[in-house]
View 1 (cartoon, protein in one colour):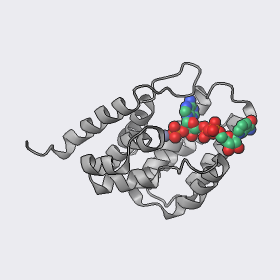
View 2 (cartoon, rainbow, N blue to C red):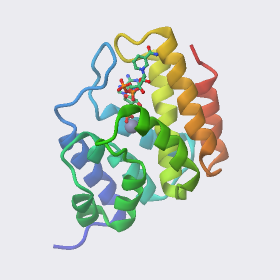
View 3 (cartoon, rainbow, N blue to C red):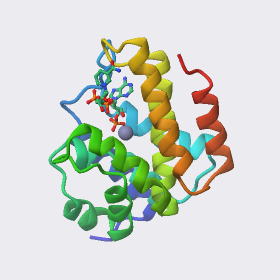
View 4 (cartoon, rainbow, N blue to C red):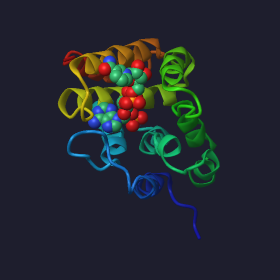
Length: 178
Ligand code: NDP
Ligand code: ZN
């Protein structure tokens, strides 16, 4: 069979992520379908950030598959190539670590991220701030929502400067800090 074009790989990634996340929900009161989040990220990158690099958009669609499902980096590499797998690896937390360590490591790793991973991370934090502001995880106190905003800002402030437009989108989301 002919190897799929780069454009069609984006749809392959959407179908792959939708399947992998099929039994998961976000933490908001409505328990939104999980796939809405990776789609929101890719949309932010493409529509608000003007990002056209398909490997970045594919990495955005796949960014939570290893962290939150049984997907392996090897699976991603075989289907989408080493560059996409590397970007996903850069934005994947080590789930064997305790939560406070994972949060601290995100801040420490941010300055060393590649451009592709930094774009995905920036869109991820923007999307999550929008969610915490308007559809927060069930049961989060005001203090906890504020702490999340401050931590996300620390991570984003450490990222290399990869997109003025996306940084402006993040700052706009941050301005809605509860
Ligand atoms: P997180 O704080 O990591 O939960 C937020 C993550 O959940 C997001 O980064 C996002 O990750 C995902 N998510 C899913 N649905 C939503 C949504 N609707 N809105 C925003 N994000 C969503 O996880 P934990 O619940 O495990 O919290 C752990 C930390 O919280 C600890 O480090 C602790 O310090 C702190 N904490 C604070 C408390 C307080 O009251 N101040 C109480 C308890 C803990 P992704 O994009 O990867 O899916
Ligand atoms: Zn995410």
